[in-house]
Amino acid sequence: MKYSVLLTSLLALTLTACSVQQELKNEVVKAETSNVSASNKFKKPNIVFIAIDDMNDWVGYMGGHPQAMTPNMDKLANEGVAFMNAHSVAPGCSPSRNALLYGIEPYHSGLYPFYEFDLHKQLKQKYTSLPILLKSNGYNTYGAGKIHHGKEYGETEWTDYLDADHQPKAFAKDKGFSTNKKNSFRPTTNPYEEMFDHQVASYGINVIKNKQKNDKPYFAAIGLVKPHLPFDCPVEFYDALPENITPPALLESDLNDIGKEGNSMRRAGDDKRFTAKNQWGDVRKAYLSCIAWADYNVGRILDAVENSPEADNTVVILWSDHGFHLGEKKSFKKFTLWEEANRVPFIIHDRREKETEQGRKVTQAVTLINVYRTLAEMAGIKAPDYVDGNSLVPQLLNQSSPVLAPAIASWGRGNYAVRTENWRFIQYFDGDQELYNHQNDNNEWHNLAKLPEYKAKVEELSALLPKNEAPTVEEYISQWSVFGADKARLKNDSAKQSKKQNKKTKKNKKNKVQ
Ligand SMILES: [Ca+2]
Image (spheres, rainbow, N blue to C red):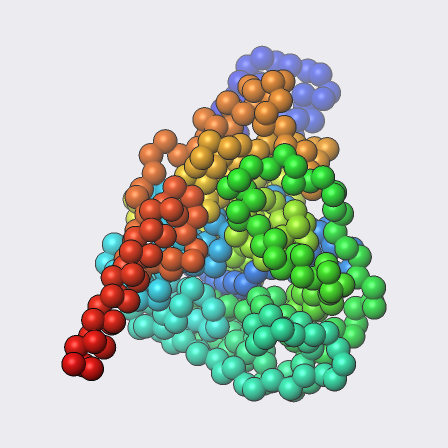
């Protein structure tokens, strides 16, 4: 429609300049391309949905680290559409996955922090999760590994689900180190088949392989848990990395222009410890090895798709729930509103559109909130009205189509980051602000928010922040993960509660003694 209007108006102007004619030709080609996709719209594709845990931009095609070993994700990016400026909705597993899978921004749902798993029962009364949407609209839904944050394997969502085994691990001698079971940075010597992600990928491969012609289309949700802590994976992937790992670029004075709330999100203790004990090299090497291991399993899944009889009617979507700091801003882990904790690998390869989308790179900022509507459109299903975000199908067909939904991340009520193509703006609940220009400051070293010449930019980006915030859902809340406007109050409440509890226990003990 858009193209035919353009065509008519251009013809009416009877412009003859060669460049205009060329432009016209391009538009006609684009118009034809978009007709091709229109014909596919009504054919339900199989969907291979690869969810990765805690993988930042240390992936080859993203350029986050020079020693990344990710041939399979790089290949997928070269075949499909890679969103180069993609970000999590929240830099933590629970809020990120809740937003993506229920299709709702934290500032609309109130789901800013982490929750106990029991919360899902009540969420399903209120919202339609993506698996439920697909299952009730003609799909067989299969899941394995980590999809939701929490074991949610019920039959309302899943035709079948694999709860893979965590086998006891054997560790290679004299490689890496560990301080406890979770903070472990050591390679393993178990056979690959014993590893959780191998089992999870194998389950997905079986779904892909065993699809019969007359079966319903499938949604195969394959949730890999690496590179999440502990950073342990088969030793071959560890040994394939060089001895010396390049550290990320660091600026000693980086934190001088960051306020109280920003600083409170950092894991300063971990950074201090790794620096003092000279352990950052081992930590980074173990992280990169787990990325390589995840990539190996992604490769197994992609091979299965490639060799499946329905390869040309399959959509592959790969995403990570959020990023990860490995020393940048003197921080370890996630839970900040900076680039490193939020930027994620995000690739969509609609194999029905092989010819048109090959290797496109979208540089506009997007968040994973758009996944729900994108997959709903691809499957020809109407998303429920409450669902946030927009379908990215226009960007899959033409990377210059403007993304409609602003890219906003939140970490605690009142704390938000807005990402655009070139800028990151952070607004904290206490009024503090940060502004970074990614055209010349990829590392987010220089906070421009307080400089008078950036006042207009701050105002422009502030206008994108949510106008109304849902109150934080407090049932089943994980207290440790509360940041922002509710932190002090909830901390007080829980302190009062435990004081009360202690008094009660003491009284009971006294009564017993008497
Ligand atoms: Ca700085």
